[in-house]
Length: 356
Image 1 (tube, one colour):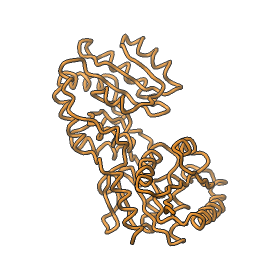
Image 2 (cartoon, rainbow, N blue to C red):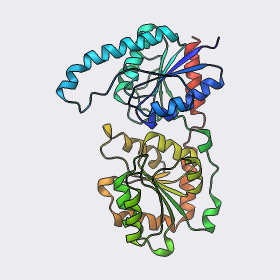
Image 3 (cartoon, rainbow, N blue to C red):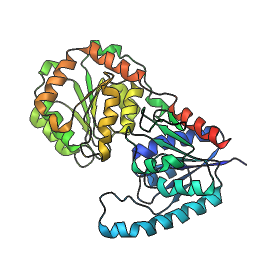
Image 4 (cartoon, helix red, strand yellow):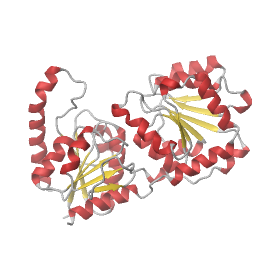
């Protein structure tokens, strides 16, 4: 009978998509993968769609919660811990891999109490609360970006698991023979500050230098974003969301987007230069740290939202549109920073620990 592995990840795509990549790798090696999540996260859509058994426990975060929620927190933690312990006894996994989200707190503690090897993976350049708490209890601590955790014998820098189809060939030689192509990404919900900024900025770029534009604006903002481009006299294709990211990345020559951990690593995998506008209110300002990974090597330009207006962005765009060779060089640098072996490395580490 095939051995079980338990993956814990939930809440957002930034946790769930890397975990799905690891799940596929475990399955390819003959393991049965089970998933631990919470009732409200995106895992409730993505995990069953991937054909994986999903187990749910009731747990939520504490940051920004009121007094009543804080008073209930100990009871909720105890209940979720018992739920996770019951699952450990039922599944008897050879190892537990946590990739972030509220579920990893009680799930990781239950693994430790059950004597099951625990491995955690942090996608961001600044570790989340759950992973910081679990690091001392873990057999191995994997990090996507160097020096996220303090140096120790348990730390391994693996990169972020990214879908194989996103690793594209570089450089883009066709860039010098046509207009550059600009891809604007605002995440699944859309980034309204970018939706407002880009039409105004592109209107100030000389017409002969304007790139082709494909702008993912989010379902709620697509119509008003199209209107803004029209009013600015800028030709652009606007979509609520993008289903095929590999195709979008293959089309693009430059990307403007937030700096979520998964996005940063996908840009590196695709070998794409980028202008990164970190979410200003991200917890512990982790998006700025993520962006610095590419920016400090010259693969990206870091644009703090509070300091970036239409005129400034227009000047930056005008400069790079005049220098296709610079865009190619930035893309090549991004690709050099990619970790195509990240998924295999994380799974290798898990199985190494499981086998003792």
